[in-house]
Image (tube, rainbow, N blue to C red; front, side):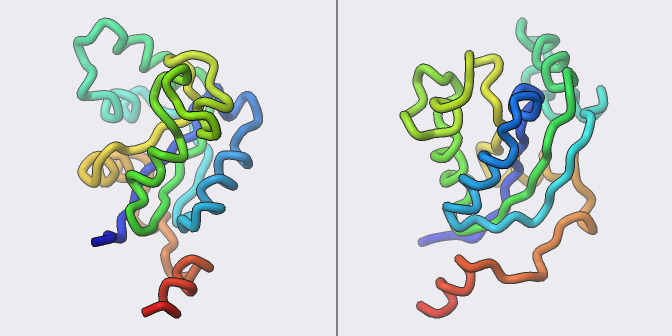
Length: 155
């Protein structure tokens, strides 16, 4: 059974610096997912620590924190049927050498540590990460996108 979900996606500092924001948004829109939240921001230390809390104490933790704060990110909330797994398919494996050709990371990422984009890996992570970067009044779900209209017509 398909499930309507929300997910958090971020274009990381390397993706922003390389001018990939539009291309990344286009891939999610082409899939039929609905953009309901979008902003560019500098990640604060508090945000970074909350975002990467599960990695605290690991050898790469400090590097992750420095990287996510090395420039602005574009934070997004997407909605759609099975959007979490669908987003992960669009992004590809974490390491670009393992990512399938045609995915964002296979096409654009340089190395695992600079892999252009972040996406939530579960509903719990999605809601936790959305809350770090967005207030609910910054999320706009009051319009119907084309995918919703098509699916509604099938019902």
